[in-house]
Amino acid sequence: MVVGDLIQEKNALLLSLEDARRQRKNRDVINLASLAAALEGRIARELVLADRVTDAVVNYISEASCLKDANRLVEAKRILGTAVSLAQGQSAEKWIREQLRTIPDSYQDPATIFRDLPVNIQGNSQTSTSTD
Amino acid sequence: MISQSNSVKVADPHHAHPRVRAKDWRSPLVRRLLPSGKYQDGDCNFDDNFRPPEVSTGSNQSLNLSWTGLKEDFEQAINTYQEPVITEFATLGLACILVERRTGLEITEVTRRGEKADYWLGDKQMLLEVSGQQAGDIDGLCSEKAGQLLDNPFNKPGYVCVATYDKRTARLWYYDGNGKG
Image (tube, rainbow over all chains, first blue to last red; front, side, top):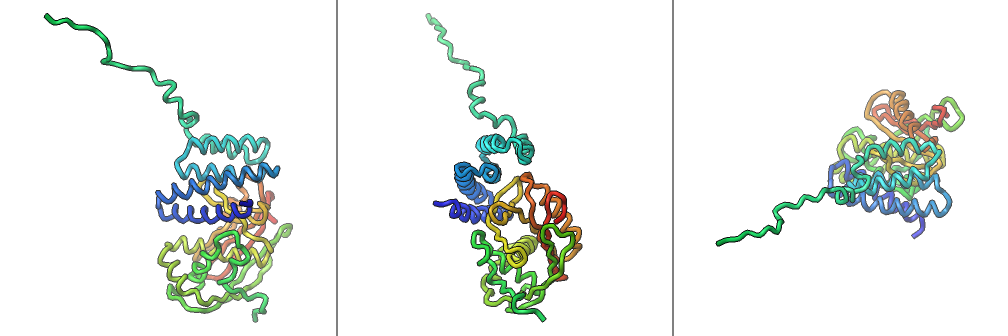
């Protein structure tokens, strides 16, 4: 699919997403936002390949915005990280860094919860008891 | 008298913006042009003030907007959307007409940024900020929207399209980083 077709399909999804947000159809918002985010990501990658990095930043920001609507905050943070690396020195960099700060640090690395959890096993001792 | 070139069929403007779902904005515009919620084919004059780049003041112009055959679509629209949404969509429909007529540009892409949608003109050349109201101060609305437009993190210029429906008047003004055309 060429970029023009991707953009057309994404436009329709984003307008439907805005409509669903207005009508507070939360399940539709999550579904549409996920679909739109996937297309924004594809468009952004195509623009990077075409050496249109500045334009790609717009679509990465939009992808992250959609992912936030879909409550996929870990992925949103990762995409904003990509966007900020591409926007170094651009006017968008500061704005993206502000957006990054809106996502709690707990979403930085979701695996941390498993890595840092202290072992706390109780009631599993192998003590023997004797009975007469 | 309005010349033929100033006549616009409200049912058609989406043809100039095939990449966005501009069809959805026709009936809301008709609703804002009609005095009541009862559909009838008709037409009206609509004044607009256009300011292109590198010009400090806008020039007044007028369009004759006509509509026909939209009854079914109209009734679906007014049964679906609340009043503020109707006004927003109406102004997007009007923006489709004015952007094509006055600038020759096309609304090509919608992207999201935070809680809002951005409309892009051309190949991400400019942004379009749109807002309408049933009644009120068009100067104030235009200034407010210009501030929002120029607050974009991409440092892009663009057009603000605002409308006030009780006076049937609209404005399409260019703004860049200097805050004016």
